[in-house]
Image 1 (spheres, helix red, strand yellow):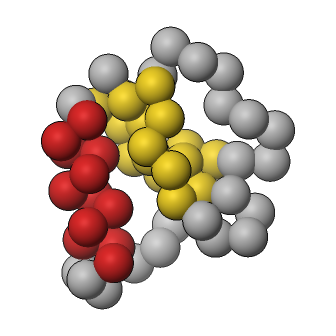
Image 2 (tube, helix red, strand yellow):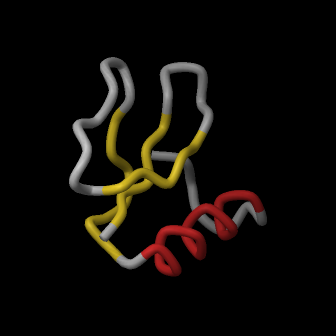
Image 3 (cartoon, rainbow, N blue to C red):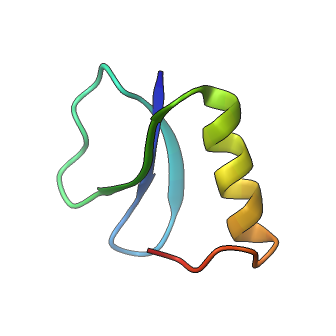
Length: 52
C-alpha cells in the first residue's frame, strides 16, 4: 500500500505506506493501491483536483 506525499516546495511523491513520512512532507492521499496513488497524481497534473 502507498501514500501520496507533498513536499514543502509542492513536489509530489508516491511513497510506501510502511515507511515513515519524511520530515516536512505531508500525506495528501492514501493509504491506497499504487495505481490509485498514480491516478491521483495524474489527476493533479491534469488540473482535475485542487492541491491539498
